[in-house]
Image 1 (cartoon, rainbow, N blue to C red):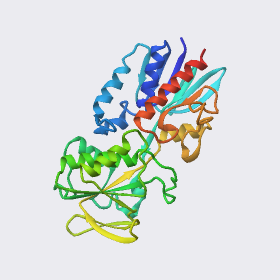
Image 2: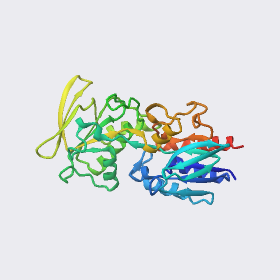
Image 3: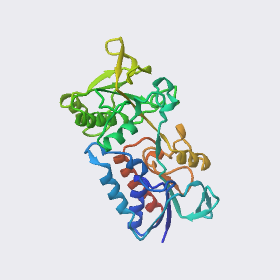
Image 4: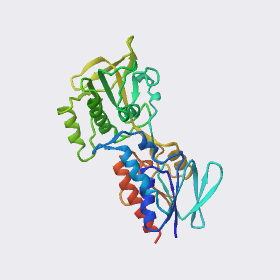
Length: 336
């Protein structure tokens, strides 16, 4: 029985593990944290179907209950070497493991909004991240900085993406539709609130995403302003004052809001960066580089090392699961 090591127990790692296990491969799944699926556990609902994130977590966790899958949590793999047609894995404590092939599914982390000091994250309580709002939505309770129901919520797109100052020129792909989804969920919880989304240009990447954007305006009265917020500051009554420009009419804009939600982009996780560098497979922005984005998009330049999901570029969960299946099929084909 061929032994496959998978590094990262997110949706990509679990999906690939379940497919390989079902085809009689012995899979060891390494997870750095104490539990799998930590990135999904923070979510409330998933677009485009608005399924509860907890339901997907339950379904994916059930796939781990296979005799051919061994899950090892709190184990950080930091390097991989090929020796005698095998892959040797090293954890941070120096312990080694062996496998025929290795799949890296170490995923992403959210851009740290503290790096955008002009927006006041971590300085003003009314400035929160998209992940902070997601937790509020999950608990069905959105409050402002003085623990009251907000009367105005403002979203800002492209925080840490498409931004030369932060060093990330790429689009994170999911932020636009996430803002639309969160704005709709906020409207359901706060029917009387004014809700604005500031954007550079809206990129509705997936099927039904454009329809969701239109629905947000026609049915939920979400208001869109084309422009970037240049500065945020606190007011005496606990609100946030923002300065921007409506670039469609070419006019400066100043307004106050109860909550300023920063739609933070995706960056490679620390584990992705470590393996990309140590295995010499780093691409742009420290994501893992594949051989070719068309026919060899799960293979790396290092023999026996494969990659799937957002360890190589920003992806939605739906795309991540499809990519994991493709990686599993590639590994099975190469093991024949």
